[in-house]
Length: 258
Image (cartoon, rainbow, N blue to C red):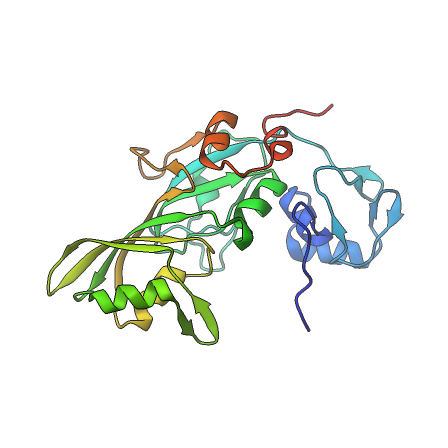
């Protein structure tokens, strides 16, 4: 079955409930299928029903969702933390680091357990949808250390694109910072944000990644933000960092509804 596609700004109802902090994804699905959820006053039993979390009137057992101010934070994710909210192994996650934040946030994309660096978190679903959409072509910049010497022909292959297990992976740009027979330090830029894309590109060329850190997302730069620290991202920063970001999305950041 083909995956259902949604217009920018709309998501599946089950995902909306999860992102709004009203239920986990599995709990949301059960609530919807059992007839506990209304959208615009109508009972919806299809968990994949498209809604706009920011404007759709969503109720659970007659109780409306509470609108909250829309915020964006930048976190320096430490290596050895997850971007999921729970883990059967009890490993720490990035949300454990967000002390003093009242809003229910979600990560814009993910960084895997062994990857560190810049992670954006928000409760503005249209912002995360826009920045995550491959068609937006937002550049992510990574500092990468791999085993072995990366040859020019490997860089050409990465920027031309590789088919890895039926999926096309391609780097927007690659630059060598330092190279020796033992290891190579690289700057790799991507635009699609596919799962573990840097590691898979490197592995396909026979290079194991030993260190991976995201240092920029669009025009937002990690800078000297310490590992484990976070800070609020202003509307002005977002506008400068993502020039193609629709103004209607920017207008909702830090907006409080009654």
